[in-house]
Amino acid sequence: MTTKTDATQGAIEPPAGIGFFEKWLSVWVALCILTGLVLGNLFPGVFEVLASWQYASVNLVVAVLIWAMVYPMMVAIDFASLSHIGDKPKGLILTLVVNWLIKPFTMAALGVLFFKYLFADLIAPADAQQYIAGLILLGAAPCTAMVFVWSQLTRGDATYTLVQVSVNDVIMVFAFAPIVAVLLGVTDFTVPWETLLLSVALYIVLPLIAGALTRRILIQGRDAAFKDSAVAAFTARVKPASVLGLLATVVLLFGFQGQVILEKPLVIALISAPLLIQSYGIFALAYAAAWAWRVPFNIAAPCALIGTSNFFELAVAVAISLFGLQSGAALATVVGVLVEVPVMLSLVAFANRTQQHFK
Image (cartoon, rainbow, N blue to C red; front, side):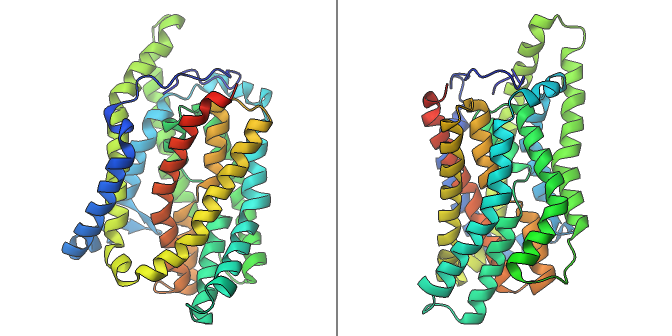
């Protein structure tokens, strides 16, 4: 993972030093998906207990694992370089345009296309409307802290990623409700502020504070020439815990929904179709635009991944509050959670294979 977090740095760090877990990450994730499905069906009671450990629709077990995943990248953030972010605004502009002017509306359009027309003969009209609502909620709730994991796996600029995520979170506070109201035609709903604020605090603020304190301890009393190497050595030591946290999260997510997946495989597949097209399409758009605009890879990759990722905790919470726990809308948001990790990992792999095309 890069330790040069100055946003003015455009050089691409070579892919040397990829660990054993990272090299075969797609294999481990596939095994974890299978493990989650098997365990979820063999021991449903255990996963029900784990799923019940939540507050404001935020599962505390998953929160701890996400914390472990994002902590190494938080250590790499150099706050002194924040003043230089404005020198390279292209990545931030692309992220904002994709997240707020394109993504919610393409998701709504794909939902209508698939469930009103292409899948009309397979799904009851009432269910179709619910699935469309769930997809809209996912499209209107952009990136969460998992973006730090994807950025880390592409050796993205940690400081720039923090700014991108933070700006999107601020906009989301004001824009999420109006966008959902317009696309769903629902005006009498309340944004679950507890879920939104708790997620930001757990996934961003606390790891950021811990990372900043750790970084301060690591570089204290060292010459400037050795500060980066000290941070790099530390993050290399803790990185395996980050990957293990990701794998454990995959097991939990698929374990939580193991019975649903086996009970409704066709519905899961149908909901996945527009989600997959949306995810790969949005990434292609943002990644191609970043390449055409000559955005450095360590900014371009996180930029495209931020546009692709969803704030699934918020989407699930709103779906449950508006339509109920057993609703089609809630199921659609859950499918979004299941689809996201494998899709994002495939996009990370693609980005790493194509980084040589960026200057």
